Image (cartoon, rainbow, N blue to C red; front, top):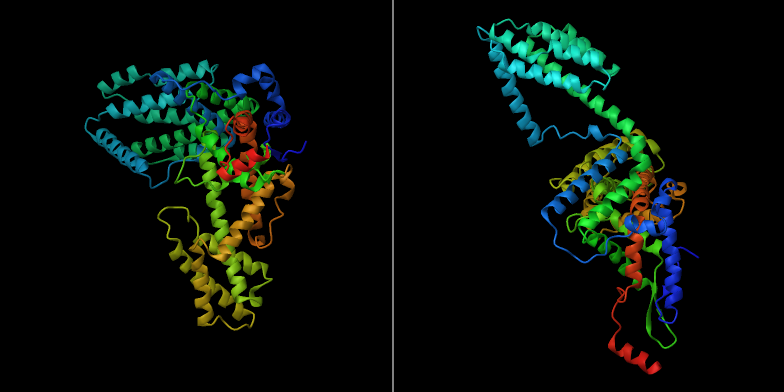
Length: 521
């Protein structure tokens, strides 16, 4: 049977309709499982992992709440490792408060260390703490079978012996540092060889060398973690579908209301589709034709693309991808703004600037740079668009004069600036046109069984941003496919309840219409 068919809600055919949607929902459940994980969620055994908990609300203990929090944290970590290829590259911003506090504390520490070592006689309290930390870091790099090197590190960096030497002012700091650098060279990845060479050849004072040692050790730790994650990824990718689904079900077992937002999300898609599927029977009674499960879920996925994060949090099944969804939304809004400005330029200036790919690329790059970060709360879009207009007029005049066309008149420049700045208004016709066509593009891809073949088929008027739009759509479709695979069984259960509950979410029948129905009977 078709996936997106509509089924009238009539009591006489209720059993047939329920059977049809049971079959369609079973197809959704099958489609949501990868080949390697289907057997784990079939027949009766699937109920534990595929069906959200329907037990009545209960009072949660503190231990249950904390355990659910730990499981959610583990779920996010596993998902991030699988989905994020640059998981270790996402460091804090350079100007963050955390970085400022850390840098100040580090500076104070190094200042104290330098003061101690310059004393007469030298103090080694902080130096010994550093060496002890260095020893632990070096030991953490060793494989379980590297007993010989482990023993050597423990012997050379014997903290008790070093403390005794410090008490007698007999610590060979230069020799210990030299040994540490040599050991780092044996343990580091080839990409760090240049850093190790600089450390060996350094003529700086001992405090500066220790600073550099810690900098390189941080890089080595990142290399080590990256290597371990890469080794772990194939295992996670093979099992992450089942792991995420089972972990999510475990969270639901502890928090029975854990699918409330997800249910509301799907229900809002159903309410949007119902008015478009209203039918009237022979007696004139208003009747609702229920949308098919796939159409319903695709509509819900489309809502995620335009989600208003300022008004409500994302559904529970999207928590692990919330940051990626927001980034996609930001990129899409910037692309739309770039396209809107370009359409205004070509329609205002006309033929002299059309059909010139190099000029189009320069203008697009210029607009994109000036509108970068437009999602930030402190970004002044109208002011930035005025700057965009000024830069565009300069670039257009340069191109026009090079090709013996007259420069833009003051009146035309004013018109161009006014139209560009007007795209901040929600009812702006150019903005409305672009947003509608972008939405058509994404809805067509979401509903298509083979969307990858149509990524380059953008609607008319969006050609200028076709590469960027296709890349954003590819990312979004990837998230949808993974989400559908993991959480499909939960969606099936929610959709069944929404479509065939005793009180389906339809508009109430007007009183006069109810009387008409009674008389017809």
